[in-house]
Length: 92
Ligand SMILES: [Zn+2]
Image (cartoon, rainbow, N blue to C red; front, side, top):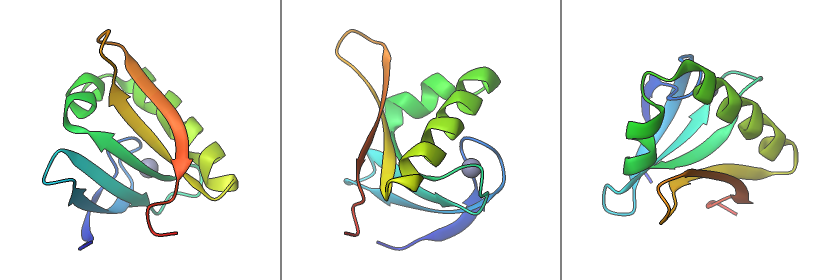
């Protein structure tokens, strides 16, 4: 995985991100201690763009996942709703 210096999709702080799963998902490691590491699908990324309250909520979830050594995985379910849950760290 090749991480690139960019800004966090959730909180806007500096983060290191990489495109994974043949471009279908973005994995990020955020430098903000109040944020976390996460993976966002392309569809979910569209959903959260421009929706500050949703990004804030996801950022809070990401820090909770980080405390248990996990990442936050965000995707759009078959019902069209955003799903966010902690998942095993891809590097572990
Ligand atoms: Zn962040």
